[in-house]
Amino acid sequence: MRSWTSYFLMFSLFVDLFLGSNGDVFRVPPLNVNQKDLLKLLELGDDIKFDVPALYVFGDSTVDSGNNNFLQSSSKANFKPFGVDFANGKPTGRFSNGRIEADFIAQVVGLPFPPPCLGLSKAEQNTLRTGVNYASSSCGVLPDTGKFLRLYGMGARKFLVNSVGMMGCSPMVFNSEHKATCDDEYNERARIVNKLLSDLWPKLQSELFGSKFIFADAYKVLADIFASPKSYGFTNTRDSCCAAAENGTRPCIHNIAPCNNRNEHVFFDPFHGSETTHFILAKHVFRVPPLNVNQKDLLKLLELGDDIKFDVPALYVFGDSTVDSGNNNFLQSSSKANFKPFGVDFANGKPTGRFSNGRIEADFIAQVVGLPFPPPCLGLSKAEQNTLRTGVNYASSSCGVLPDTGKFLRLYGMGARKFLVNSVGMMGCSPMVFNSEHKATCDDEYNERARIVNKLLSDLWPKLQSELFGSKFIFADAYKVLADIFASPKSYGFTNTRDSCCAAAENGTRPCIHNIAPCNNRNEHVFFDPFHGSETTHFILAKRCLKESSICRPINLVDFLRA
Image (cartoon, rainbow, N blue to C red; front, side, top):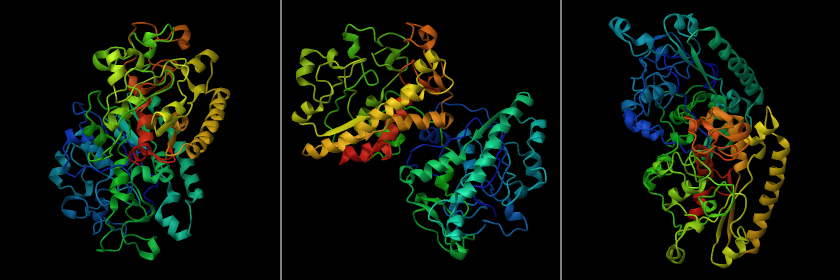
């Protein structure tokens, strides 16, 4: 039996959708979840329609749904504890405590789980049209399994190809080699194969008319999990959940109850992922919640739980255009965002002064803690200035609104005790830099300047916290989030990292042109204008800060606000 992360291919008549994650605590939906609720949980919206006639699955034990039950093989999963979280707790032949990745994809598109081909009756073989699972543990069921050219000849046009995972991180490797860390020799082999696979599919797509391929980087998802397991809700990355023979290097022992905290284990057996891991491998693109989302639903979407309580009386925002919510509307300045296409995804599609198509990071944080969006201070009436107690936005594009903007000591003197400090982002990766300097890659000179400033900021706040009694600081590493996005944009749902979504003057180096419609695929652009992120980018920044202590450090924003 090969490792659960071993080489496999999963092809289907539909796969536009391979969903993974960066930084979520994943709660697996119930087995009987309906399609509409699942789409909501995945933040895809409940009105999305799929025209997917069938799903065919090819591969090894990672996606075997029971074919090995019918083969002379020692590699089987048709006994307890496998299937403990499937219907009635019965084993099905899946090497998991519950569903596998292909099952989740089937549920998303509204199809039944593809049944194992060897379990079909003669009548079913002749009539079944919604898809079949041909995968088999250890090898293909048929000699031509994986020969997608035959599928193409039969009409298949959309193919999803899964990468090789992190073979060197399985419990089998940990326990058989007594490793303290993952075995990079195994992982290097996986990376070599993945490079070959990644280079192969564009070539095939160009040769096979009408075909479409996507490459699902399971290796990266797993690398993210191992780098920050707690941010995914995992407490155990190296042990199987089931009781496994020979010090955890062999398959599960028959009929011995598995661990109770299955959702906290990356692996169910020494080779294969838990149902939670499969769900993570089927959940991918960051979807931005609607503008009018209520706090309870937003907490659910962020998988924070709907019973979490925040005691946050107010939110005050200081900064530049990144978090300006409209102050520059009231200033003599050429740096404004009070015209279309800005605000196209805000209420009624109206520009607000935010340098974005919709909300900014501070807005998402306000929604999470149950506060209104902090209004721009220069737009407040006299009465509001005297009565507003839920927070204000003082940020202004290009500079501070007041001479003492950013001088948090004054805020401390007025009673503020909790401060979030955002890092400088990757300035050298903006469309302005790309287009003005005709760069093929990010400009590291700009980025090095940002890193220098960030190091100074990172070193400053612990010192201030020690000097200001009762104060608490966290440092939000926006630079790291953006670096992750640029390293693997597709894993975040981005298809464009270097162009602004709006039509920008002077070859994309100047602000958006007034009243020209922006691109339609705004959620796929990192930047909305040549300088500022799209609403999706702001959502990702907020989401990761809220949940990851490696991004907002030393503790994540949720824990910080509740402390």
